[in-house]
Image 1 (cartoon, rainbow, N blue to C red):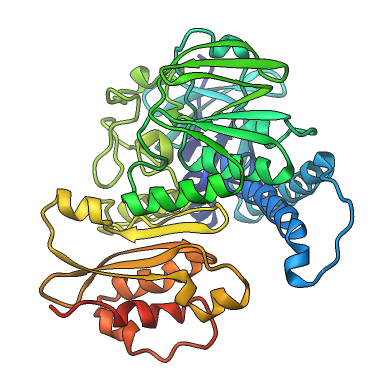
Image 2: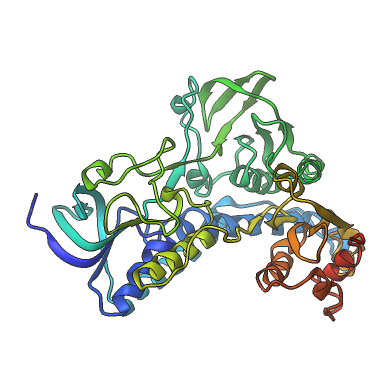
Length: 459
């Protein structure tokens, strides 16, 4: 081991929490280094959240073009050019990387490009991408190595060279017949996008319903949407083996029959990037799933070492990674912010969107929490009518003997934006009557909240 270079802060991985900690502490005068093996800024701006939403929007434009006659717009023959779709996405990524590099320069944090691994407590050796090695030792060390697509050990799966979301977002051609293995966030978003581009798509999921953690009415609406768009769905199907090669000819043997296609996209969950980085040499322990063990302040089992984001088992959302940054910064500066009890909102960026914050009915029943249910169809929201997007519903849970909002679910256009209104009300501790009686602009999607909360049954 070479003589270590001393830093106040060393961050392994440049995801949202890690880079924010590096930039913030460096701007406060700390000597900070952020080690990143490949993606400047982590997965979100490069290969995940933002690139996928960019491609999804292109697919929405394609869908609206098909519906042109419905809106009085005459459309002729048109095609989707995947090289242009990819080029638009790449241009956005390049712009985001440039913004990140500017942040490093402005803050004074050092970006070290290379593969890092612990060689001793709070000491990281970096095999530099440009050649050579450096050894960095931090008074404070942050682990932010993220996660990767999980690849099951099903016979033939790895050998078939399937796509993950990373490769799917880089395709310069349209798969003729795409099989999506997994009915969660990534699988559903990309399944719909490629169907709208023109691929034939089949979603295969081992669970009894798509997004099976949600309430049955949600799963049913999403499945109805997909079938209406021509996407085949095979749920309750356990994968036995895979034959062939993705990109040519692929065959899935499942407990519910055989599915054939030209391309296979694996979207069956995430694996933390904690293997092979020397955690045992740093005194950092992991749990049975490979996540770094952390407490409510994201402190690991090693003194002076924190872990954030996916690798620490935090919910796999960029906005939660950003909150992890706040938790660690608070701990480093004498605050008392913790991860326990925080809200975890989410949005599935299908079209229409699915968004939820707080409890759904399934969770409320499992926890023995009494509630009153309010639910209205999106067809009752005037703004949805004006844009001919009336599929879905708004749903809220209010405590059984009180006015507190327990949870909110929206499946409809701009669901994520509407959810934010309810989330702020929940954070402020406002009673549901505040939204019921609010003067909300007409006609907006959020205006539907007045109708929703007006339908709450009497307590």
